[in-house]
Image 1 (cartoon, rainbow, N blue to C red):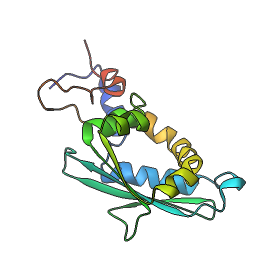
Image 2 (image 1 turned 90 degrees about the horizontal axis):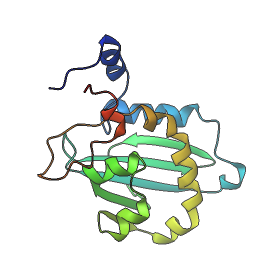
Image 3 (image 1 turned 120 degrees about the vertical axis):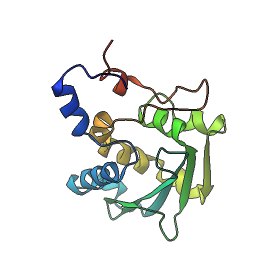
Image 4 (image 1 turned 60 degrees about the horizontal axis):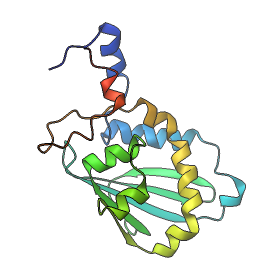
Amino acid sequence: MTPLASDTSLTTLRNVAAFLSPEWLEELRAAATRSARLPDDLAEVSATFQQVVREAPGGEVAYAIRIAGGHVEVEPGPPDAPDLTFTTDYVTAVAMNQGRLTAQEALTSGRLRVRGNLDVLAADARALGAVDDLFADVRARTTYHLGPYPAGDDKARGPTNAARRTR
């Protein structure tokens, strides 16, 4: 185990949620609840997106993001009837969450799969961007599991955790 720089580092680590943990999902839900609304021109958007992350430290994780009437809701677990499902592995999900890999890059490289009504994606892409903005603060405070990962794949070790390790 890598020693921490100081007691304040330990406190910092305890005050942020680990990526995909129940606490992290609760932070997303709270961020969505705190936001007043999406921009008025997105008020007509109605869609449910499911994110599935395989090979996460605690096993597969699924959660839903629902957009309706200009509001966003986050729910743990798979939704009944998602319009779209995004599926990826943990390392790819971390890279995307940290902004080191775009969804387009993950999709074209085969690391992200999309299933469902692709017309929803085309019509509601701007709404997804607005939702992403709602979660910026949570992303900035998220911690990530530091391994072990498959041999040679340390892509999930990003700047968020590197800054909290010493020497």
